[in-house]
Length: 152
Image (cartoon, rainbow, N blue to C red; front, side, top):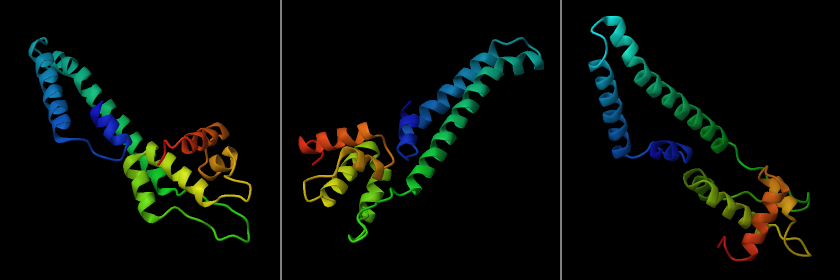
């Protein structure tokens, strides 16, 4: 689970997690083969569950990495009045989004809302959400959390 979580945030995971996964997988494989029928077919059948688990785990991790790399490469579109300059999250802000995930996405949305104030106040939750391709409810939650001081 540690490796899976790290993968969701664009990291490869810690050495300890990988060592424990490898040792545990090899121990399971060895134990299954050791108690198997003393024939080649029996040992292959006994080894199959461990091999299948390792393979399915790798498939899951690769899907998460692919989804993460696709979403990290997309930058949120920023639309404003045609008379206003287009505001874009700073490069360091985009790098932090990739590194720290959801919390920094919320902060980036709040920064965008603050930098795109309207004459009558902050943009609506729907406008905030549309800039980050999220639901209107998400935008309202960002606005509420930002006004409460939870987003810095």
